[in-house]
Amino acid sequence: MKFGPVPLEEAEGAILVHSQRLAGGTLKKGRVLSAEDVGKLREADIESVVTARLEDGDVGEDAAAAAVAEALAGDNVTAAEAFTGRCNLSAGTHGVVRIDRDRLERLNRIHEAVTVATVTPWTVAEPKQMLATIKIIPFAVPRDVLDAVLDAARGEAPLVSVAPFVPHAVGLVMTRLPGTREKLLDSTEEATRNRVEALGSSLANSIRCGHDEEEIAGAVAALRDGGCSPILIAGASATVDRRDVAPAGVVAAGGEVVHFGMPVDPGNLILLAKLGDIPVLVLPGCARSPKENGLDWVLRRLLAEMPVAPGDIMDMGSGGFLKDIPSRPMPRGRRREPEAAGGRRVAAVVLAAGQSRRMGGVNKLV
Image 1 (spheres, rainbow, N blue to C red):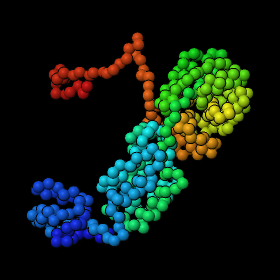
Image 2 (image 1 turned 135 degrees about the vertical axis):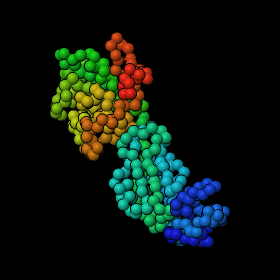
Image 3 (image 1 turned 90 degrees about the horizontal axis):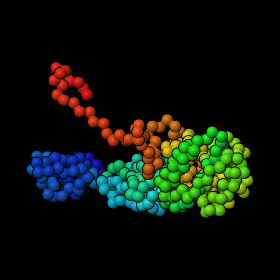
């Protein structure tokens, strides 16, 4: 690509690099200069402009961005029309975003002219939410560079895709110990219901029982027989070992422990088990809270019918320190607001000030 200042006599058909403000309007950068545009520049006493002109083997920015977007987009991902060297990818459904991070990093290292930015892998996407943006930095890229990028973008699986949520009938077991308040179980059930409904599923049944191996086994079996999958267990006491009460109850019901622990905080003490083909999660204590925690990272994959193996959980450490992030959102959906005394909710506080005459020349700074 030829780049640099040229006299107006040589500017027609070239790409304007910098916007030019004229009396009759602005010629924006990226515009292919016409004979009329050159005439307007001449009338403004401009003798030369900085332009870019494609050479043989160059691919224009919009065509290049569109080609990369097409190669990246997988299931439930749509590409917008390329404009000014940029093409955006958006979600076509509500689901979990799958991104091949290793291939993305290799792609971005091929050449400075081609860049791809995406959202964080495994996050939840809403329909039409932007997932990635492809930006061609100069006005064109060499064909061999584009071909190398396209080769990196393509693979056995799409680089960017969305696994849609599939409605599930989720079952919940909550255990009691002496002194366990029913109000705590009520709030746990509500938080769980909101969490699964935000992912397109429903809390089909919940059972409260003693924190006892046999009682847990009976509750898990009842939920299985009732068609619930997955099954969640919120224990009255935290699980500290594979052989603890809650996982022992799953094993007594005919299940097996798959993995215990995860490198996500809050959420370290989650336990993954299975009862036949039914996933079972023994929840960490933080699952009683509506704030994002390790449970969400596993549950969203299960409800999108994505397999979750021990290695998948072990790989969640990058970005898994959530504890001190004040921006962690609550799950989409219902959110309880604090109530004032007497059950009244405060919608607004209005601070009304006058002209501050009693304060003389100093305002009260309400």
